[in-house]
Image 1 (tube, rainbow, N blue to C red):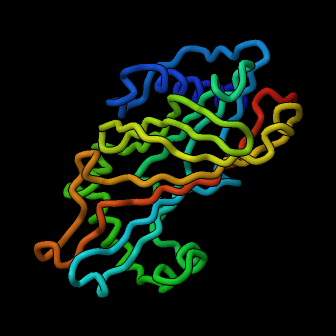
Image 2: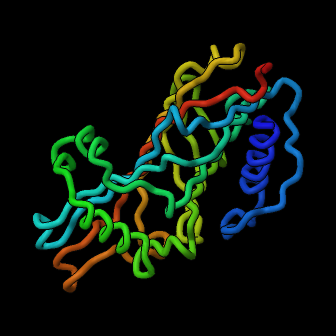
Length: 240
């Protein structure tokens, strides 16, 4: 049952990636069965063994009174499809919801260190979440999804350059992202896993988002947000 459910979810992501509707899709999509080419291999992303994090930074003349923030996505879904024609013909996608983000987990802040290390009160975290995800910033109620989908892949293991489409706030932008993939040759021939790591910088204003600010910008959140991922996979082609 798990296998069939995962295949159905991944089929949706593949169709989203291949369709021009991807740029505006914000609701569940009817999906068709996923077809895996002979010799191709499909891997599902494993959230429990992965990390997807966003880093937002304080700004403004009163920035010293503000805080940097760590947002993590404990729940997400996605796939990596390895084509029989090799990495250049392969594709991947990752999707998570803004309203499911965990904000400023004390252990994660401490792990980042330096200016992120100081713990924040529950009241401060709740207020920040309300402001960043609310109607004057990311509008998570109206635009809940962040989607990253490959358009083109070049390079050789373990180093790749991926041209990706990033959907945020109902708009899509394209950019190139470096990705390091570890363990891919072994995963191709076994029921094992591989690890993909990378990071990208999103400018909120590029997606029609006005970065949060108060008091005329005296205290604000910087336009640039870092998205960092380290994701492990599960081989869906492996025998049970």
